[in-house]
Image 1 (cartoon, rainbow, N blue to C red):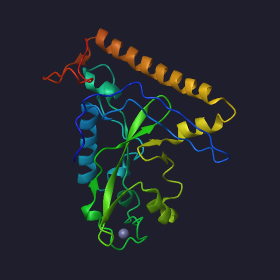
Image 2 (image 1 turned 60 degrees about the vertical axis):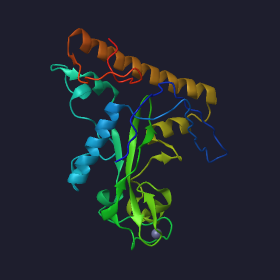
Image 3 (image 1 turned 30 degrees about the vertical axis):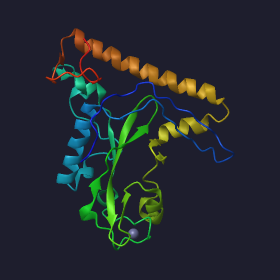
Length: 245
Ligand SMILES: [Zn+2]
């Protein structure tokens, strides 16, 4: 499990869109980005992975596309919560062999015969999955093919294309090499095709700003009512998850 420790997270990433011909493809570009996950986010990812590893029926009771951390920011403010919980985003975990109970097809040889799901391992770092006003972490596992001697990700588009009889209609996220866009954001952009790109971009920035301010007001409320507890004992100048007040 090789998630990189976070050193610096940008809050000023931006989205640029291009609409091409009738296909209206959406390209998401991020700039000013180093490691994508804070330490508290990393802890949550590790925790969810452990739960999935230990329970193959994990998805029976958990929405694979929206695994939300329990407690903390998502609990009532009647009890003390940790400041770290304000930084944690939900996870979408695409693990085809657990979601469909079937070995996925290798995208290279087009066969599932030599795919060894027992040796599947988690990817090094989840993709950032962009939505309206916020984001999630899109996680998946790498499956090895003993024939091709190569690995492929669970959300590999070619692999899902081979398995479309099983997967069609299930995975509705749009993938680029490094990032992903959820259906809600994608629909918003596509339905804004009559609007100038600069206006659409400004609207998205406004939504993200309002979401951020809303979270901030909640944090201040918790602070005023003395419901914030400090957890981390060690402080790092470059760690953005440590308390600032
Ligand atoms: Zn193969």
